[in-house]
Image (cartoon, rainbow, N blue to C red; front, side, top):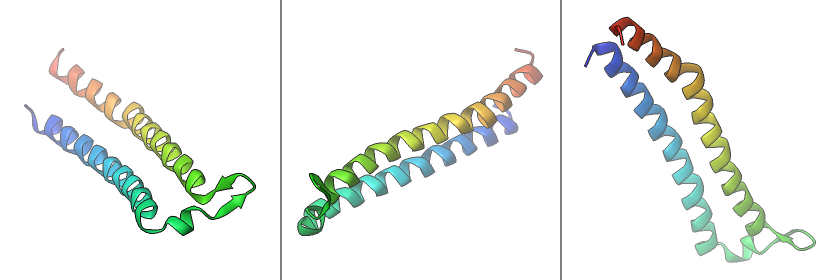
Length: 91
């Protein structure tokens, strides 16, 4: 494996691990709030909407945003660079 390809693979892993870490922190932060801050999570934000439900929706939204961020990065950076390396290798 060539060094530019290894560097690209390391970058991809760095991006993937970073986004995964953010998602894990968001998710476990939410779970910890459920476990240790029940009264806070039961706070009404609007009629029929508690902070817990709102934050649950935020966790789901965060997963979509982070997935989009990875796709955006892959389409704009990773895929073109991989294609360039393939072309240079003659494949």
